[in-house]
Length: 328
Image (cartoon, rainbow, N blue to C red; front, side, top):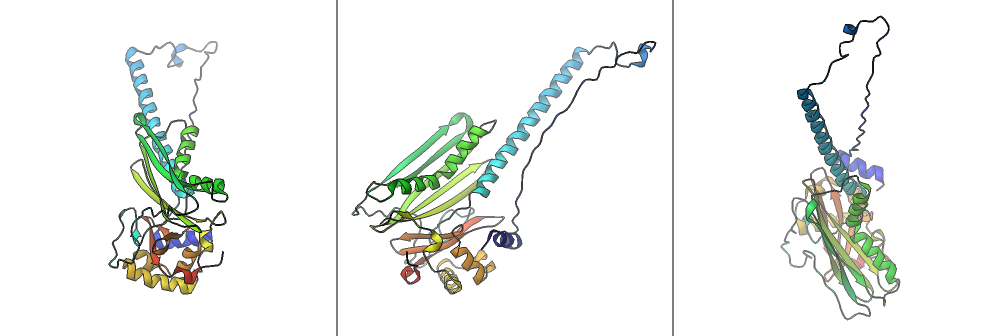
């Protein structure tokens, strides 16, 4: 699915729109002094010779203060709005969930009726491998500006081929919001405030061949709460980051089976009712939207969606994922 089709689908079916917030504030002014020409009477110059009374000075000062306060609040809300909008638009990443239809309105996973479905996020780390895994933490608090940012992410030991590249990629994906916030704090005239960011990373599966990392995060600013879930799949044996669009064969036939499995696992879904088999196949094969990560039960497969009302994702548990694997 190319960018034009994705935008047309979301605009026509879900009522999405993109807004560009621009603010150009200009203030021009000047004092024009009238010079009395020879022979012209002073009374023809109505303001000549008059003085501003103390009461007038007070009124002028009050007016200036009110204007400055108004400009401050306008600038603050516009800056914060651009900050939130930029994050939401700039960061369209792979989002992963666990056996449910999730959204901003529903942070907990739907409990499936069948225990064979993967639920929630949790670490499932095999320590009997040739490499080890540890977690790095990042924390920042600023009580004066009501800022709280906390997260963690996994790193692999040097025993893994290309470990520096793999660790750098995991760090960049996990700290995307963290780094974006810091860049805004440096570039903005006023530091963003009233901002929280919570990120938790999980190693959902690992062995001597593959490793999957799921990064779940929530951030709040200017009264709005957003969330994101990113999945990273690693070819441990060859030291490579896998392209999520190159793992499974997700054609129209796969999409039709996915729809049936989702109905059985997740129940009725409004987003699934909107999508045709072709649309669904495009989402499942596009690495900007699809969701793929290994679990002890097999593999979670799905896609991320965004409407005007919610951002969420749908996944299905594939215990038979090997039947759909591409060769890599």
